[in-house]
Image (tube, rainbow, N blue to C red; front, side, top):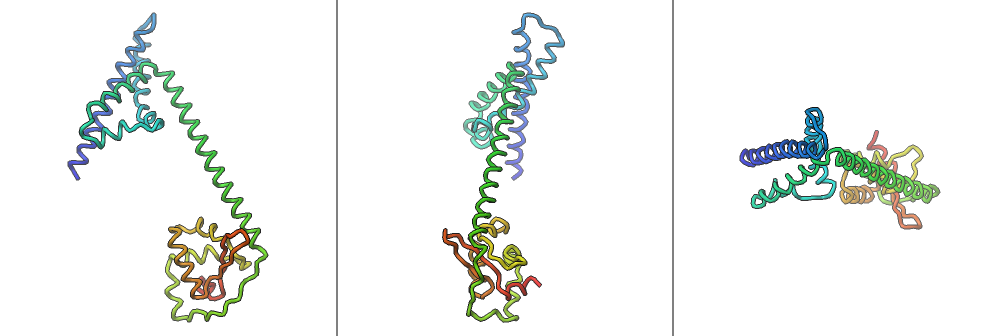
Length: 229
């Protein structure tokens, strides 16, 4: 464990040194390409070069490159990957302002796309739940001739997992709730939720109906409500 941690720290230190040196070299090169140069311009370009070189790990992540991953994981390819990484850092430092503007725009665009995708997914979930809810609102509770669970057997359903599922299904109007909505609310694996709901159904604590489109919905029986009391 200590050896692995030492190797990771050693590699991280090497990467930081490479970023600093390449940022310095690229910044100096960026200054020398100008027709006129002075100390103020040199210091400015060196600082911008180091900043630009520091963003290379982010850039590699954006383009899904495995260079850094190979440096940390593949013992046999350190040299070539260090050289490639150094090249990226020098290029970024040499064109620091343009590179920083480009990568900042890329990051902002990526964030906007992810936010848009999340909003789209949330809207889709809301529409699905609304449609399911409207389909099952008119469904009346189904009578069930199974015997209710005796009080002495009720204790096993006061497990936190069952309580979370029953609490999610519960509503004051005793309406059926879409099973997908329950799965979205309960912090549990879907297979485990299905398994527990089946056990609740077998013990006449939960009723289940299926809408015309095949979506399942569940509601509590009077016995299940006693568990929450």
